Image 1 (cartoon, rainbow, N blue to C red):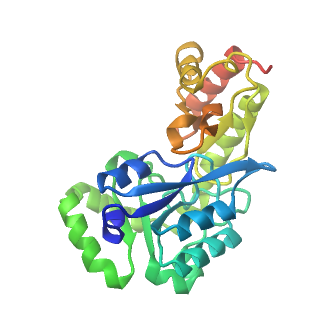
Image 2: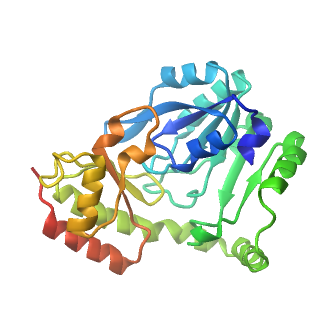
Length: 292
């Protein structure tokens, strides 16, 4: 809905890659043109090249999709990066559409920053999308919301009304309960996933994977070319080997890229399962995989 409200067919939309798989598909539904800016590993973190971003936005982009904390890398965009992005978008009258579904899952004192609150000048150009899906472990419900600039709220509601009828009644009551949960629930949420990330990271590193420690969300996007059993396999073959021979399901990295071929070296692990499932996955990794 946010994309169709801000854009018309043939407009360009900037997307950081690797990306959540649905962003390009949602663009194509409305005949929008994705323009990719690549995040790359650098000194143990994920970074974008500002000149690449500048060219993409100044090339006539109508909107930029910003997912932070980021799926699949776990990157949390810092204030300096957000200030850079906001300034560039405002200069070029480019809407910022944020995806903040992992806002309560940040680690090592990383802070999730809400752009309209931190940068008041961006309020008229920012649409904040969020959901109870991750924080309430209710991903299948697809129950969320969008905060829009007042001048486009009526248009947003008109578009949304044609795409979605309504959330089922029981889910609306569940949402009301969710918004009434004490602050302590949200403050402690990250501890559940941080411990799982740390345990899984240790097992993956021991097996030969190159791991960039996530700053947020609950994914591990890892380089697999130093794992003896996987190093000669292409991306899909490596994912299938993990499933069939190791017994651990992963997503091939190419699934998250539209322009760059670097995804062929990565696999995405998710640690949103139970502690028992995580323990079983770690045991299988330790048994079946070895470093080069």
